Amino acid sequence: MKHGVLGTGMVGQAIATKLAGLGHEVKMGSRTAAGGKAAAWAKAAGAKASSGTFAEAAAFGEVLWNCTKGEASLAALEQAGSRNLDGKILVDVANPLDFSKGMPPSLFVCNTDSLGEQIQRANPGAKVVKALNTINADVMVEPGKLPGEHAVFVCGNDPGAKGRVVEILSGELGWRRVVDLGDITAARGTEAYLLLWIRLMGALGTARFNVGIVK
Amino acid sequence: MKHGVLGTGMVGQAIATKLAGLGHEVKMGSRTAAGGKAAAWAKAAGAKASSGTFAEAAAFGEVLWNCTKGEASLAALEQAGSRNLDGKILVDVANPLDFSKGMPPSLFVCNTDSLGEQIQRANPGAKVVKALNTINADVMVEPGKLPGEHAVFVCGNDPGAKGRVVEILSGELGWRRVVDLGDITAARGTEAYLLLWIRLMGALGTARFNVGIVK
Image 1 (cartoon, rainbow over the protein chains, first blue to last red):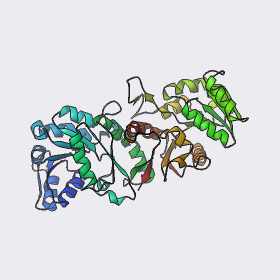
Image 2 (image 1 turned 45 degrees about the vertical axis):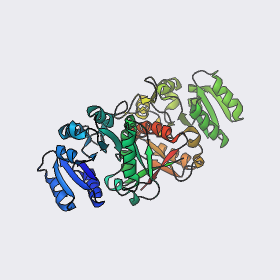
Image 3 (image 1 turned 90 degrees about the horizontal axis):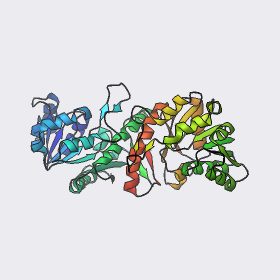
């Protein structure tokens, strides 16, 4: 399957590397075609890996992954171009972190709106599924690094797209507990959780943790 | 030990009943001394249980529990009176839920501030410890109702007060995992988590759940 990964940071690298390792064709997109990190990644990741602009990666992928920084996501998706997004699954892994007021970061949108909703509104033809944004990059693609049945959350408006993402998460990525929280407005919950996540990271002394649900 | 429980709702009833059952003297406070629910609770809860105004309950308790609705908390604590709060541990269990815009609720303060901080600023002589606000009332006081080592979060500015609350939680209330998130600004995290909690309640079909930490 063809995947387009938008973003060259830790999250984009982790997801693109995992997907390429699973045998998929993966194009990593960045702001400019000559993007150093995307090209370097593609060179290291093997014959099925390639790099390009956001638009080229979006045009290439059947499933797209928004791994850009939250503050840059809307601009990156505008560069990707609506005709390259229309009808496609867009997995939104970004968080609306605002570092402008110092540490710990706050969120630039929350409570009555979310980045996931902003992305869906700005790209009505895309099938946005918010997922994996509550988990550190290396655990996202290797949940077995942590013990027990910890959880990943998904939400989105298109049931078919969400079902496909659940398949990818529970199948190829190995997640044992995928919790469907409903439509894309549930991104208000999974993004706001970052405010707790940041404090937990401080208290636990590591970003390699997750939550499990007990009931 | 003498406890003052402010609030007569499900949370106040659960905590007051638990503390009375453990043999403590407990006074439940409400807006008016003749408050029907507080008086009814005291009558049912035995010889060491009593009821009164917010001010009477605050004056009575060595440890105070804010179990009022978030939107009413600041007014309730003003009625309790700063001289009745000064120097005391004030466990803040409230959440800043805003139901005015319909369901699901949003928060009337979040992200760059929190109800816990508002309460601490309004009552600088009190030693505010935010705790238990992330958990359904019946599980708060009986964590063994859920399987495994799920977590309760505490935060506050006074280390001694926080340590005493941790003792109560892990001792008398039976919590096996208490996570200290730091100073009272961490209430931004535990209160914002409610936005996820509400979606989880919908997805799981029950309010009787909690999260555990895996790392």
